[in-house]
Image: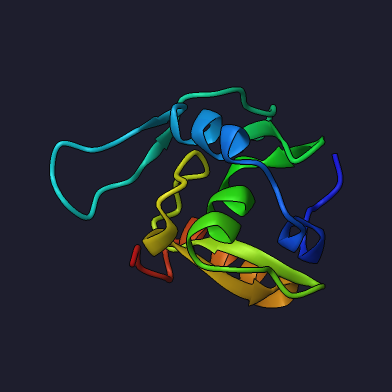
Length: 113
């Protein structure tokens, strides 16, 4: 599956956006993770058919709520939950920043934001 980036800035239909939103489980309280209830890949990332291609759910959420993803950027989960699509938990970062943060968190040297 390719990593969608700027190509998602192209127009998509409202039905696709509604279908995407219908696959999100919202938390009881404010600020929690929006759990992706659609399909997932083996590494625990949500996937969705959107705008004519299979996409990572967190990247689609970022584009819908925040804006286009610049070429070469990863979308980092500040909550460290790979199934989270809450746009306030997603941050556009470089690949090295994303990998470094993931390693720090897994090694216990970082904190969950």
